[in-house]
Length: 111
Image 1 (cartoon, rainbow, N blue to C red):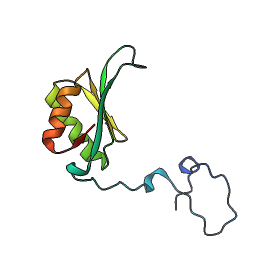
Image 2: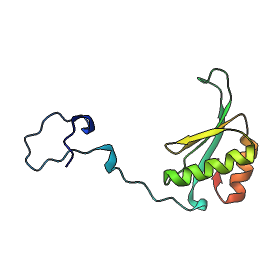
Image 3: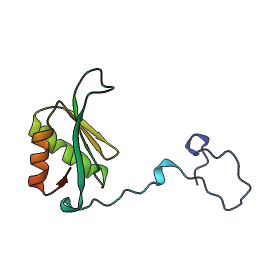
Image 4: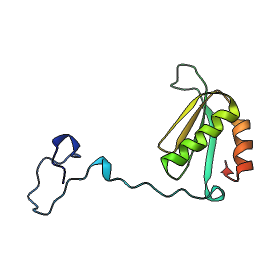
């Protein structure tokens, strides 16, 4: 049991003798759904990004490693940069049509 005060999540004190602190390290990763069961939303956005346009792919359910692999494929397909985090992929620029076409060919359901 880790009693480091920095790793506690909002609990200062407990009178329960069997209480165990939960830390961020104990979160489980969800298994990645097959491509045909994924329902992804693809759109572009400019608001809050200093006028720069980004294409967002949301709705991915699965492991961070699989999300990163899909991000890498999309960046290579579009020839630009991007990032991924928490089930969302950001691709620099307006590439909605290219990404929708690519994801459809890969077997994803695209909205």
